[in-house]
Amino acid sequence: MSPSAPALGPVGSFVKHHFRHFNAAALVDAAEGYRTFLAGGGRMMLSMAGAMSTAELGLSLAEMIRQDKIHLITCTGANLEEDIFNLVAHDFYERVPHYRDLTPADEQALLDRHMNRVTDTCIPEMEAMRRMEKAMLEVWMEADRKGERYFPHEFFQQVLRSGKYEPYYQIDPKHSWMLAALEKNVPIVVPGWEDSTLGNMYAAACIRGDIKNVHTVRTGIEYMTWLAEHYTKVTKDAPLGMFQIGGGIAGDFPICVVPMLHQDLERTGVPLWGYFCQISDSTTSYGSYSGAVPNEKITWGKLGEATPKFIVESDATIVAPLMFAYLLGW
Image (cartoon, rainbow, N blue to C red):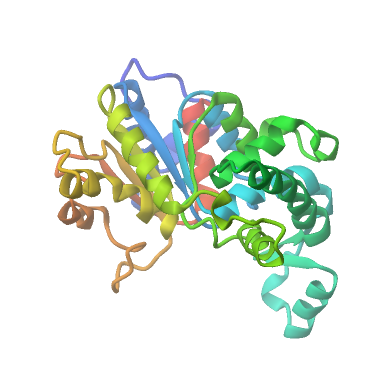
């Protein structure tokens, strides 16, 4: 670490001293690369897959946003909604530490109680999902009636801004990354939002006729066109890096904006991604894009030879909070 680097806190100091080899060393290298990238004027996009919101990553992620260490978020529809589920229904969640021992009958019993399991955590359908469905249906139908159209995350933000659900908050609001992003006006991109609980509920509302225009919620193609213009604008002044948690569409979608800009729009002056790190537990590679090593992305025009590239092959629920603590001085 350079002499001018900010002092590390207790967690960061432990990590720096003990994490010396293998994936542990990769974690430190990636965190130092992230810090150096921001110190040099770079800006960072977080790409978030998996069930990180249900893992309560907001405990550290929200502070990363508030301290201007994340400037753009791309996430799955599940992560978008599950941060709010946790915000309004945390006390009703149930943890199942013995989930590996559950029988099919045990799983059916959870379903019968409307408890939807994500590994060791059960999300309460009535208190979380149906409560949010009611809130979202109100803003969807209002926009539909007025002939207005918004992105999925913008509808969530309308609900949060209204304040009407504050009485239902069951965690400290400072631990909600969605509230932090709203406070800091951090842009959000949600590719494939249709593949989420609220996406299914929206489809059902269209089928019932509650919503007349299926296009009231804007689409993934519109997210990509927005991202293309945003990337072009931001990188005129500063490089943009990518910190990817997991794989799938949350990472695949945004990283492709660069080759699209270069090859399809011929904006060849737009720079490549300036930093890349992925926390992954995907097997390398057997054709899996999620398991592809960063160098493969050079051949697709996404990263350059000199781009700082890191991959930490481990559990994101362990690695991400440690990296964030390192960067936050905790």
